[in-house]
Amino acid sequence: MWESVARQAKPLRTKRPVGSPPAVEVGAEMRLVTKAVPQLELNPVARSSPLVKPAVPPLAPLGRRERLKLSRGRKEIEARLDLHGMTQGRAHRALSAFLHRAHSEGLTFVLIITGKGKVGSESERGVLRRQVPQWLSQPEFRGLIVGFEEAHVGHGGAGALYVRIRRSRMP
Image 1 (cartoon, helix red, strand yellow):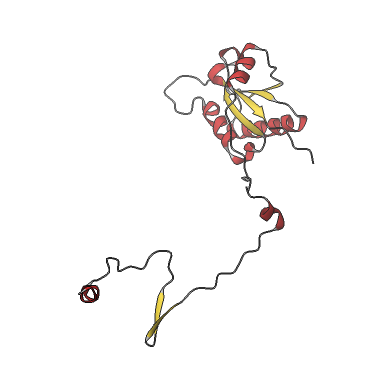
Image 2 (cartoon, helix red, strand yellow):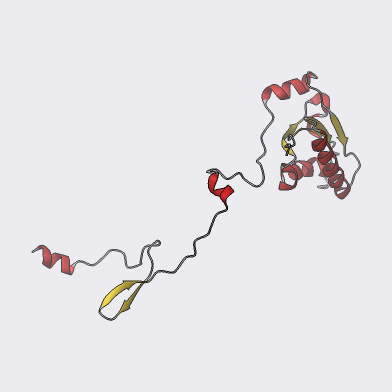
């Protein structure tokens, strides 16, 4: 009785599963056809390291204690960059040069002053205030900085950013 039921049963899936190779009929028998996949040889460094580091390090927020020490003046801000009155292009070049210099000098915390922008109906007001955090999030700068946050009111509030510089690696 079971044989009779099994012969009449039709499979639920008519499509082949995603992971299986296509079947090609040859004569009376079915043979699986597989593509030859070349084996990629990993370099010895990549093979020995189980965890591959990302090319661009992620950003991390400043710690609560660090932020408090900066805002209260217990931790020194080692350099300042004021971008007031600069165009976007000039500000980007100045920011890049400043961060590269701070990184090479081994500084830890710097302050970038963008200004709050004027309140008005024009959408172009406060451009640097919006742009600088976006620039700092790009891969271009993530190798230089650990993270950034809005500064305390005493250092400029919404118009300034605390930036923690990444330590340079000694070869």
